[in-house]
Amino acid sequence: MIENKTLLEELLTRPKTGYPNLDRIYDRLRGIPGWARELIGKLMIDVELLKKEGVGLRRQCDSLRGTIQTMADNHVEEKARLEQERDAAQARVAKLTAALEEIAWIEVDDKNDWINRPELYNVVIMSRVALSAPKREEREA
Image 1 (cartoon, rainbow, N blue to C red):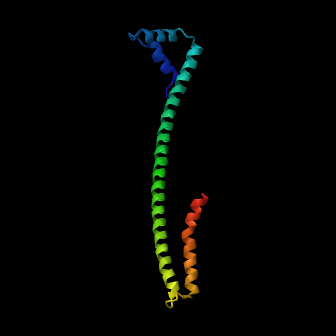
Image 2 (image 1 turned 90 degrees about the vertical axis):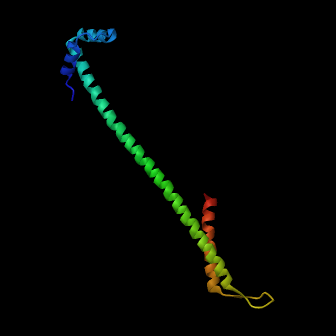
Image 3 (image 1 turned 90 degrees about the horizontal axis):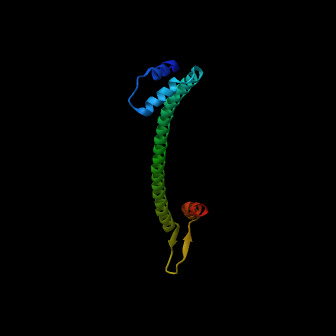
């Protein structure tokens, strides 16, 4: 930690710098009463501490920003992967539904009479409902 007396003493005992504006500032500091110098010293310490804290906070913010960006990227990748899996599963269910429909109804003769197999037909109906569920969710959203 910076000591206010050391910093002020350094400022007050500095020789002329050769820069008129800076020399004028040092001259003004030398003319300030003791209580004001003490206050300036305390303020300078506070400013230095705030600078250090600001750097730490900036690093933390950068770290958090990186973490959030990584999480967002991972979320996008995971969402895309899940959508691909869902599409593949829906395609498999559609193929199975078509196969079950062929099995569920058997052509008897040329008159297009059909024999109903209810246990398979129920599976077909449930498959159709499962296929239409995501479409319904998309419409509702």
